[in-house]
Each structure stands twice: as structure tokens, then as C-alpha cells.
Length: 179
Length: 274
Image (cartoon, rainbow over all chains, first blue to last red; front, side, top):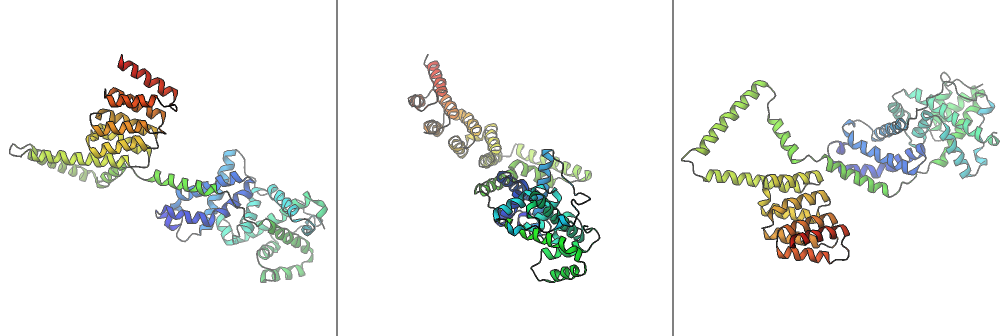
């Protein structure tokens, strides 16, 4: 990216080859639509050119590209007139029975994946994003903290909440799987 | 009762354990915490099970091949857009040279005035031979030619259009190389507006045989754009040249000619012969 920033625009092709699938996954899980996801990947690479001077020498390209991707999704919501959902102060279903592990292994693979996709889609944006960053983008907590401008401890707490709410949502959708 | 994630260390231990391979130190730390706090075990196991179940969604989806093509187009467009025009480069250079302090600005203006007077008196001096003026004219013509050719070669259609206008305004189209570039524009430019402007400029040079031949060739091009056919046909007919009229008649004989072009050129021909 330093080459791109310093004027070698062709070097962006190499970055595209290395990172476009990861970004496509990010947007596909967010939007659920392949065409929209491809448009947004294109938008991110366009912004890389437009804002290339903001890339720092000591920066991590993955974190920087994800910060652009987050801005793209925020802008898309804003244009669509949707207000981003914020983290709820009190977690739902706080009883012990509801927190019991789900018997995911009793489900067929595709059935389980469908259930999880539906549950993920129901999560508030900020929680879904945390799972995306920590689980699917494999970003260390330190980098998530940098990206979200918060502390590592806060990230860990929020990841736990997000995973808990994901499990609770799946349980509500498939109560027969509660152990 | 659920654990309060804000104060309970369960969140911190669990968050470390889920991203670590089994039996690592984070798992051991969580396990020892759960041994001391058995009431938290159910919640921890539920979170671990949910996290593990996400393995099934790990497969990285593959976008269409079209994404790479669109990316390349975007980069090409960006590069074309960012390439500074000759005019903006000239302006930027002059801006760099122009001093920022008012005092220096006045001094520069004064120096340029003196330089102008010296050059003027030298050029206009009775003993100065006309060769100086001729040389100056030659240099200006050369510069005009270079600017025209450079603009006509730009990737941006608006730059090429500016090149056509520039060559017409400065009368650069007298130059053979510029005329050849304009003919090439008529035949090959991807933008119809640029081609039409080039035809318009070449119309003033029909007395030059290569221009007439080049336009006839453009007219007879098999996959020529109807607008260009109409414009070239019209220009050729105004020349009064017999071979040009024959070229238009050959075009009118073609079955694939657009009716509107046929109608326009037929009426033009009829008007000329009446």
C-alpha cells in the first residue's frame, strides 16, 4: 500500500488479488447479497485510491482496509435512511436455563449453518460486526480495539456479549435444540 | 442468574479462550476459573459451543470474475482522470515560478517589462533582419504543433476535443502531422463528438489532397457511425470535387446505410445538382 500511496497505482492490483475475497466475505455476510457485496468491494478499493494518503507507514493494511469497509457500510446505511442499531444496555434472556449450550451437533451441517446465518442477521449491527471481525476476519483483539477506538478489555467483554446473544437468538429460533 | 459481563472476569477469560486452540493457557485459566465458579460453567460452555458452530460458516465466498474486470476499469478510469492536462501542467509551472511576496511580484513584473522592451526593440530594430521574426514564427508554430498533437493523443475525450479546438484556433491544422492526427481522429476516435469536431476542422483544408482522400476513406469505412457518415458526406459535397460526389453516391448505394443518413445526403446532392 505504501507503493500505491507514493503514486504506483498499478500496485493496487496485487492488493486486490490478496484481499478482495476477504472483503467480499465481509460485505456478503453483512448485506446477504452478492451483487451488493461486489459493489461495496469495488467501493472500498476506490476509496483506497482516494484516501491513499491516509495510510500510515506503521499501519496495518488489513485494519486500514477494514476501517474503509466499515465506513462504506455506514455510508450505505445512511443513504438507505437506516439508523444503525446500538448495543443494548441489558442483555436479553438472562436466566441460566436459557444460557445452556445448544446441541448444534444434533443438526445437519446445512441446517445448522442456516440457523446461524439467520441468528447472525438478527443481531444488532455492532454485535454482528464484532463477531465478523474476531471470528471471520481473524483480527486480534488489539487490532479490533484500534479499529473501534476502544480498549482491548472492552472488546473482549463485547465479544462475549455478542456470542452470548447469538446463542440466545439461535435458541429462540430452534428451541428443540436446547439441552 | 447471568453473570454481569462488565465486572465478571468470565468475559475476559472466555474471550481469550475462544480464539485460542484447545488446551492452551487461556483454556486452562478459564477452566480453573470455572472450577472455582461452577455457576458460570453453563454460560461458558454455551458461548464456546456457539463459537465452534460458526466454523461451518468459515468458507470464504468467491465473487464473480466480473469483479476483477470492474476493478481494472476503475483503476484505468482513475489514472486517466488523474493525469494532469497539458494546460494545467503549464499553469502549475507558472504558479510555481510566480513569487509569493508582493515586493518580488512587482520586481518580477518590472523585470518582464524590461525584458519585453529589450526583445521588442531588438526585433523591431531597422537593422534587425527579418530572419529573427521568421525564426520566432517558426518556434511558435512548432510549439502550437506540439501542443495540438499532445492534446489529440490524450486518453480523455475532453482533452482530445480541446486539442481539435486548439488546432483550429491556432491554425495548426496547416501542419501535415496535425492534419494526419486529425484524420486519424475522424477514423478511430472512440468518441463521436471528438470525431465530429475533427471533421469540422478538416473542412477548411479540403484543398489539401490527403485530407480529401482521408475523409473519403472515412466515409467508406464499413462500420462507420451514421453521424460521422452524414457529417463527412456533407463536408465532401461542399468541396465541389467530383471524386467526393462519387464517394457519396457509392455510399448511397449501400443497403446497410441508415435511412436518415440516406435522406440527408440525397437531399444535399439534389440541392447541389439543381
